[in-house]
Length: 94
Length: 479
Image (cartoon, rainbow over all chains, first blue to last red; front, side, top):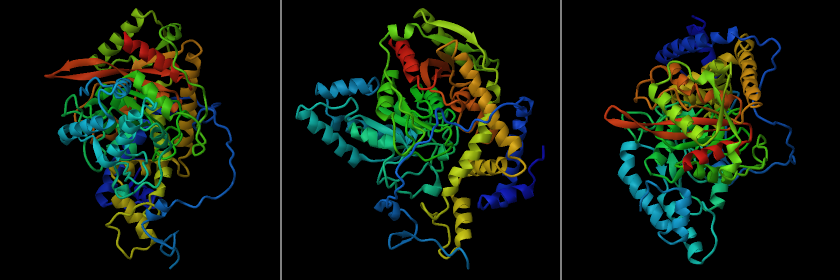
């Protein structure tokens, strides 16, 4: 228990660019601690010579022609801000 | 019109025999929705004008004596994490409240080509994260069998719409049980196809190594019809594998199939009604001369831990795109906010508690110093869970289990305890992690207090062997 302290929550929220209230930080800290301690059961499983499974069933490379399609009109309309058919982003460096 | 017993098959026959028109049927469903949905809350949005336009198209073809598909004019409901062009798709999240879809999901495009009709978009747990539909940012859906109980989730709106005769059938998505568990709670059929059987293009991604789209229907036969219509290769989803699919002839095609009973699913602590239900289902299969064999899947108990490491990892990655720049932006983000403030405030105000919990959990298990202990470990145990299934499928053709450990629980019962909500998926999780097809089929309703609640059972098949479980399910439902 106690793997997640207040600073860890703040750091994770910063990494995920998620603004949290003081109250949210407290309740999420408790939730995460409880959930992570449930995961402890995995320690009893021997996985020494086991390969990780990343999902999928019969995955293999699928090739297609490397060409760009212009986004459909609707895609641009749904941007919160656009200019001359381009996505508008606030300055990154100020 | 009697909507209660109307299936896709009967609906199609009624149309062809001109017992009713598609327009009449569509209007009838909207009337039913007006009467019922105030109490049930299955739909987030309706599209009456477009639906009636679609119905008129089918009616015209039928009047002209043209052949139409079995799904032509069929009024369906679509879970609101699947895109329909020009319609708002919210994923039941404030962060996408104003997001208008600019294209059709592949499954929607395929259903449109069969002239199916979409009545509306149904409620879900926010971004399909939940097992009760209580995590929706907009409304709580009630179980039509008992409105003090949840419909299950995350496809709770779709399951409730079908169970309350507010749609002929519906589409849902299933990442860890989100089609099968609500199907079980609402007394309808729910199919999660094999990972790689149906394109997810245009479904809002939750866990990309797990997500599948599938039908919620009144009968196994209807589930086969929709599965057949939506499956198959798609240039927009590279995980889809083209495999032949043909429902076997009954009963010859399925009587040789052997069903395994995995002992780990018959543990103490399952509800007595669920025990009764699964017993009844097995008795019926035995009477139909289906052979059973007890088998063991020793890593079953680790599925929830594995899932709740892998899923948040994938979800935190998938949800990073909702940043207030490329999709809708929350109105409370200040006009002159800089880029960093837009990110922080849009996500902070846009995501509800469960997405926030999983974003942080996913960020944690992927972070330096914890990756090996959590994420990598979970991926390895996932391999062991899959290998358990590989082994038993050398001896048996399908597995039978309860769909859920309990019938539908009360609204609010688990909503303050995330871990107990996570455990509601304990019987549907292992097959999801292994990518296997699985179906929930209702047994019957049992008396609970002054009302009745449905109980369902689950059949799990080999990869791309939907035909086996659908065939067994059809045999079950015809007898």
